[in-house]
Length: 358
Image 1 (spheres, rainbow, N blue to C red):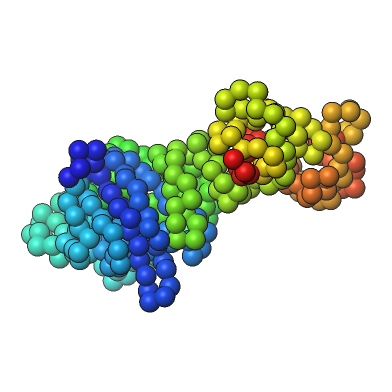
Image 2 (cartoon, rainbow, N blue to C red):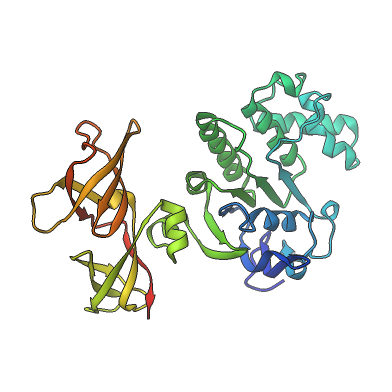
């Protein structure tokens, strides 16, 4: 084991997976420390589920190495790895009781029936379902079935817990509650977990780290705040926070890591960690655009093309000199009318350079 590899870590070293000429995972490397929940996030077809299946041993690596707790498991089968997976479909046996479902993996692994049942009851207590052992899966709600699936994975005491879009079959309110329960269990037990989703809000809510994937590669890895505040490129900015991507220009470099920029005729000073010069691409979060009556001089002038009330916020589509802009505003009491002329300012947050020529 490398001296820099933490105990219990999951490590990918330049891993690729090919199906003939089709590339499913392309030269992916990362390290996940013990007790960390990392989310693989990205659109359909980006490689996140293939990466999860490679960890589980359900697919064989074409190139590279996978290490779990410092041990090279690249050539090991799924049954040889101390890894448990919670599937999107729950995969509960309908003819078995909840207790029997949770005990099944232990019994198959050779545990005595009485010991397996005792550990299964402990697993159900962990997820708050200790009174539900005699029931059949059909007698449970979707959220309860998902917790049974989590308990079944936990009783195997895995070195790595894998969760494959575990909340996709639940409604919005239930998704929020179950994701909080999963996160609480993961933190309490200090589990190393890899969580796959295409839902940005879900990833931001549960993760210690997020790995954003695009076209079978890692686009960016970091904490939720790092990815939200400082996306590495246009794809990450757009995928993580629905950013407006506009063109600007660097006019000067007043200090290290800063740039005086012109965006749509307005002057801004932005972080410029890569020392971009000349024409740049700028990501502007929807909440970083401020709309007001079109009266002041230091504003762009646009027109509201669409308005939608979402309870706690208004969402607007605004036509502007920068093109079509997506805007979120918290003022729901004084909505702007469709067709109204508006002034547009940039807030002092949520605006960053994501591309250009260094």
